[in-house]
Amino acid sequence: MRQHIVAAAVVRGDKVLLARRHAAAHQGGLWEFPGGKVEPGEEPLTALARELDEELGISLESATPLIDVPHDYADKSIRLNVWRVERFSGEPHGREGQPLVWVAMDELRQYEFPCANLPVVTAMQLPSHYLITPDPAREGERFIPRLEASLQAGVKLLQLRAKSLSRGQYRALATEVKALCHRFGATLLLNGDAELVVEVGADGLHLSGSALMSLSCRPLGSNYKLSASCHDAAELKRASEVGIDFVVLSPVMPTNTHPGAETLGWHSFEQLLKAVPLPVYALGGMTLHDLSTARRAGAQGIAAIGALWGLDSESF
Image (cartoon, helix red, strand yellow):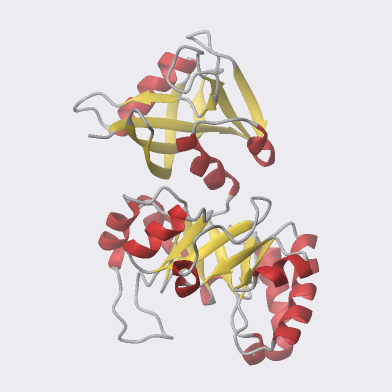
């Protein structure tokens, strides 16, 4: 039986609150997102509110699901149910004598966490929208202006997908796109070529499902972001085993590009996520209005081509 634990990513501006575990506790001395055990028969949000009061002296006003992490330690198995908390009353303080610290999102990896908390760190540093670019050859001269429009609208994570281009053409385009993305503070992942990621100076790599299943270890260091396409439990399991940072799971809903294809639907999507200790984006037939549904199903957010492409106003 997994021990059910709730935890809170308590956010204030661009910082998140961490607590240090007592030396005598399990994983003692490490930093964590505050929380504790869910009592038998207790609802997770009720447990979260109780723990925040007992540990930090604050009253929970609202919380949104962030990530659910199953993890097996050598001596125990847990399910870490994590919520993002931006609305609370009171001033957090260590009611149990534990040190607290407010940490900038981009500095979280400077702290040492229990292993179960590491996917939470990744989730905190990822946005809710993941843009996959359409074929540049079909877009023609509109490609760069429409990409810039998406970046201006708020896209912060994108994958450059350009299967119709030669390697040389892709390299040239990737170099231009990288400069544009970095000007807007966005993260660029290249599709399928680890060597080119290093050559271009991109931020990471996205792998197809077949490429993922051929891996025995992570193809790039931890200083690069690594994502993969998954479609079933076996691919999700491999992504976790080889150290993928986050994945897209598809197809959730019907799409115009694959009419008649079998889809997961939200129920199956949610069930698959229960065994995945990674942030997962829902892909396939997504619109901006699907974000709340995706999050209720346990997703980090949505991934899309059309819904996030060429936006003409701030959308997020």
